[in-house]
Image 1 (cartoon, one colour):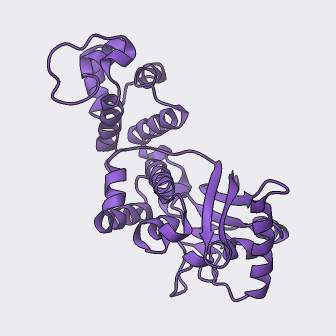
Image 2 (tube, helix red, strand yellow; image 1 turned 90 degrees about the vertical axis):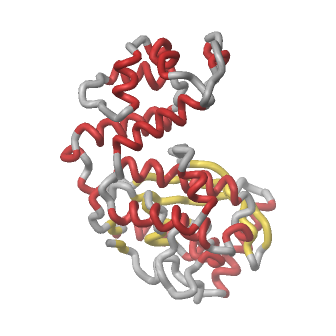
Length: 296
């Protein structure tokens, strides 16, 4: 991934979404492109136009955190976007500073995490990477995503499923939201591991094969959300909504346990009980990892 281009495109897309009147400026003359001009953004960030232009072009070697913070504030970046901006800048400054897990080292599910998955008998749980590979799951997790299982027994990649599998809009009721989140997560992953062939190859594949992905990728939106609600339309159980929480694993950087739950005494909680009963009678449910708990 070309980090210079990433910084440029990220800042330009953030600048384009702000109207002068939104930040107390008077718009003068006809504008060829939407949003703030470079000189207006520089004024808001209290830096020279030449200096801001240098940063927008990805020349960030000497930029201080104070200046970067001022630019983030002027662009009205949220917490996830600000974090993403700083990650891009730091990655551009020094390749040697990138974490070792970002260089496509095999990601292994620790035995303690596997034991935790098995102990969650009433809640679906997955182990997934920032590339959105599902590398392990408990029985209820397999049952929840049974409609997404690879017919050939390969590892389930949620991004590939969302954008390239016709079953996705049927299983994921709010498909548009899931698609936005998947692209935002991959954008963050690519910034943290810009030299990762696995991430780059996946992005290239999706960009080539999916107009929906390509359009979203061009927006440069990022997602760092670790919790939310998903509505499923399960082929055997119908529609229900589950809350989810993604928990990072310190021993396996870039790997998360995603646990799904429902509020007590709700129809969704009843659906979880039915899912458990269905899983018990469908023990041959395909494993999303193709039977493996390790990727390389």
